Length: 381
Image 1 (cartoon, helix red, strand yellow):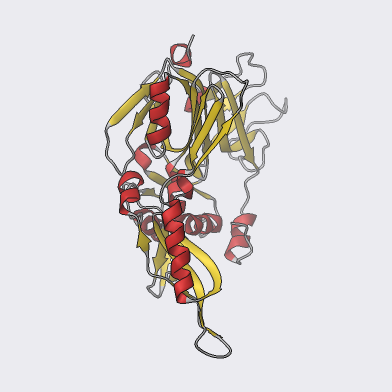
Image 2 (cartoon, helix red, strand yellow):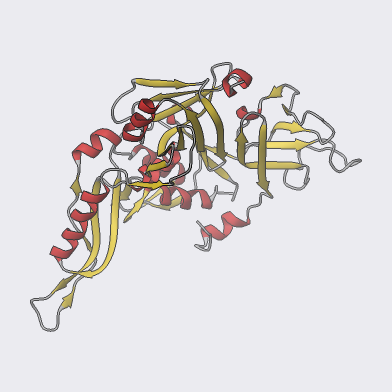
C-alpha cells in the first residue's frame, strides 16, 4: 500500500515561481517516503520526498527539477507543506547524481572589498567598497533573482571584478556531483530535498539608507516586501511598537535582519514568532496565551488532539503553539494561566513528521531573558 493510499498525502509539483504556475506532476502512488519539518521561526521548514519512476522521468527530474515549487496536501485537500526543491538526487543502477543546492546559486553578484591602489609606493588601501552588480538573466528567468554579496580582503578594483565575474559564471546554475559504484544494483529513484520559503529571505539583500527610527513590525513588513522577485504576498503582522534604528546599509541578507528582530521580542520582552505558511504568506505573531493541543501518556494510540478534544493528524500539527500533556505529574492542579511555569505545557518550537504516523515535537522553556539580552546587543542571533 502506498503512502497516498494509506494516509492520503499528495505532493503537487509546479514550475518554479519565476517561470509561472504550470503544474508539472502529481506525486501520490509513486511516493516511497515523505518527511517534513516545521519551525516556530520559519514556518514550513524542510521536506524530503523519495519517488520511484521510469528512467525518462528521472532524467527530466535531474535536468529540470531544482527550483520547482512544491505543495503537499492531506486527504482533505488542505495544505500541509509548501516550498521549493533545493536538491535533486537520483539513483540509476550503479550511477548516483546530485544537483543543487539552489540556495548556493548566485545570479546577482557583487563583491565587498578594500581597494588597493598599486600605483603608489607603498600601495594604499581605501575604505571598504562594493563593486557594481553583475547578473545572469538566463538564470534569473529560470530560478528567480538570487543575490550574493561576496566579501574579500584587500584587492584591486580589477581583481574584485574578476572575483565577481568568475563566481557568477560558475554559480549561476546548480552544481552537480556524481558517483559510480560498479557491482551495485538498485531500482531507479529520485529524492527531492526541499526548503520552505523562509529560506528565500537568505537569498536577497535588504538595505535602508534613511535616518531616524521605526517600529519593529514596520521593519519586518518592509524586509519581506523587499524581495526583488515579489514571491511574498502582504504579510500578516501583529503590532510590535518596539523601536529600532531605521538606517541599515550593510548589505546583509534579509534573513539576518529578521533573526535580529525576532531576538528582540516585544516592548515588554514578550516572544514573537515569524513563519511562512500557505501561499508563502508570512505571519509575525505574538506568542499565544491559549493552548492549541493536548495529548496523554496513557493513550495507546499516541494521538494529538485539539484542546477541545478533536483529533489532529500528525501531518497537520503546527509549531508556535502550546501543547498540554494532561496526565503527566499526576495530582498536580491544572491551571492554564501557568503556561510558563507548569512543565506539562510545552511551546512547540519544532514539528518533525515522517510518514506514515511518526511525529516528534520539541520545545523549551519560554522566558523573557533572551529578549532582554538581545536588546543590549548580547543575544545569539
